[in-house]
Amino acid sequence: MSTVEGQTVTLSIHASPGEAGEAAAEQVADLVRRNSAAVLGLATGSSPLPLYEALAKKDIDLASVAAFALDEYIGLPAGHEQSYAAVIRTHVIEPLGMTPARVHIPDGNPDDEELAGEAYEEAIVGAGGVDLQILGIGSNGHIGFNEPGAPFSSRTRAVTLAERTRRDNARFFDTPDAVPTRAVTQGLATIFEARQLLLIAHGAGKAQAIRRALTGPVTEDFPASLIQHHPNVTVFLDRDAAALL
Image (cartoon, rainbow, N blue to C red; front, side, top):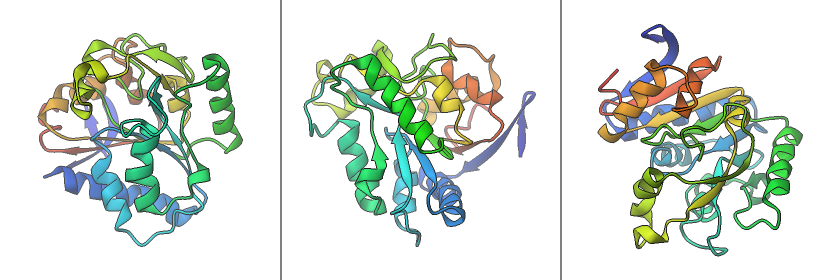
């Protein structure tokens, strides 16, 4: 347990992204060993990849685990390789041996966005809530796709992506203009109800965001700061991401 400027959080700092991912994967594996039907919250992006890669090498059975993805782009064609449904299938479901029907992802092309958000909330509740929510962090402090200004009371809904987020994500697309402008995301209140939060980040580009999330004021202008008020949160970092703490 480490205390950072008045806020008590569990920090796990490592020499490399791979080592941080290994340590984070062990926390997930420990949960699954204790509860084979645990409910996980899944994040996408580059930060959680070392965690998923390390978890795939562990001798655990995730076939009975349920999972809920944090978010999905709106408007990408079904099967698009950068849809989060495709990313989770490729990097999580298949290598971890999860049961596809037990992994839930927001609908990126819903007939009714409001009803789709409500249905996703109901599915999480119906599963008994999320036991452990994996999180990355955006350079502007977003978690999920809750951009600066997102209400702490927010629930699963459609949102407009900040231009900074679109620029950060452009590396995954052929051109910057190909990055969707909207997404559906679990809300901050939804995320906060998970029984454990596991935030993972690596690289100097995340150092400022990590410092502000852990030591700055808790404010809707920087959504990740809300984790300071969660009762069970662990932050896994490489040394570059932790450099400003």
